[in-house]
Length: 291
Image (cartoon, rainbow, N blue to C red; front, side):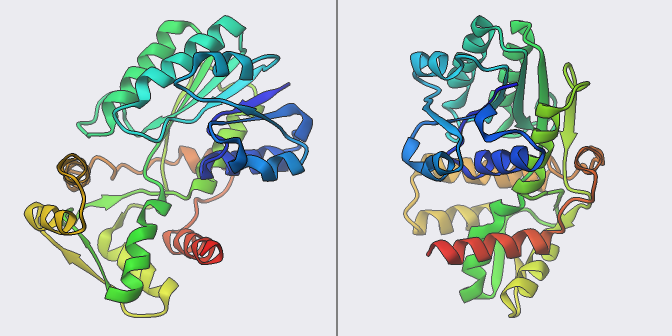
């Protein structure tokens, strides 16, 4: 069985490959597709075949799929530009006769009113229409999304957000990566859609408390209004489109779109999901190593 991991140059892709190797998949049976192959030089050293793969370049997708049995389609990283690239991969996988395609979607993508949801919903619909044997992993929030906030809090002593008392059920990238490796390597998952999240909903006050543990200093949560958020982002030099996008994300979180805990992730990986403080500590440690 040959498995192609797309977007392998990113953090999630690397972690999935790590998880596949831990599950006993031979390096020679893993293909790492990356838009920038220099980002996966470490994988070459581990005996993994690396191929150029750009979602917006169909020829590169078709070439990457040569001899592949299963594919992990990691969603693109540029909101507003993802869907077309996803469809390129889906169509190429169908042409290649791929036996299983796993897609990393978003929690409740088909029902929630959230700025990130439409492209995921459309991709899921395209995947179903393709007839490919597929598994949809609806990942909730990544704990690592809070890394910039935690690093700023090391200086400011606070985490500011316009989400009120909302909660999220974030899990670590490593948790989501392990789940992807499970469904890629086990039978019985095709045709399933899994809602994946952390075990416990946490408030932003909880996140600040976890940051305090990691940073070993006092950190508080500072609720702000949407207007204050937009003014802060403008002061940081962000353009109007980005400001509106970030504000819309926080508005969705404030409405509770990421607060629905589900036990499926823990069941798939066979252990509790990573506590928020542990996930943040690992992210901070990794960031400090790369500085």
